[in-house]
Image 1 (cartoon, rainbow, N blue to C red):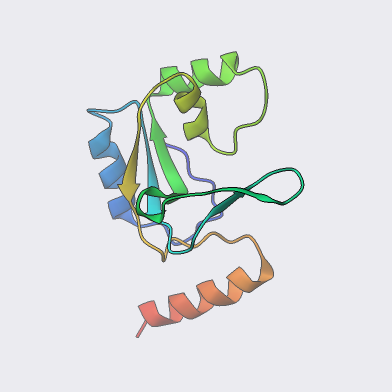
Image 2 (image 1 turned 90 degrees about the horizontal axis):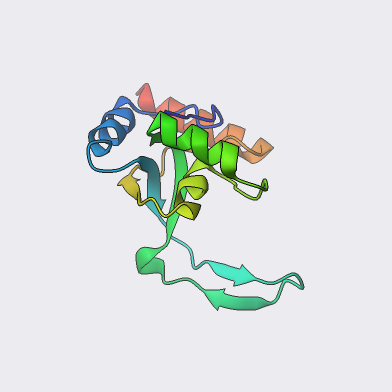
Length: 126
């Protein structure tokens, strides 16, 4: 299991749900359905595609993998273009399961995220 630590509000149910999927998949990740429209751009920041929101997911951590397969994928990937470990398995044609997480699994990336997380934590203690 991989958790990047940038998501401090991880829930035990995420871990349990991922582990349940490992009977049927070699990889699984927590994810949420995209709320926003997602555009794909080219090198000139011009729109080249728009995803279908019904099947667009925002990937989070934790992620869970068959360890041997993940290590082999890391060893055989010739470049460093992967932004997450799921991509490594996808490139080797393994199916990766998207497991419903929730929007409270906020990633701490910017200064603004700190305030969002603080406010959310306050609601947990009411």
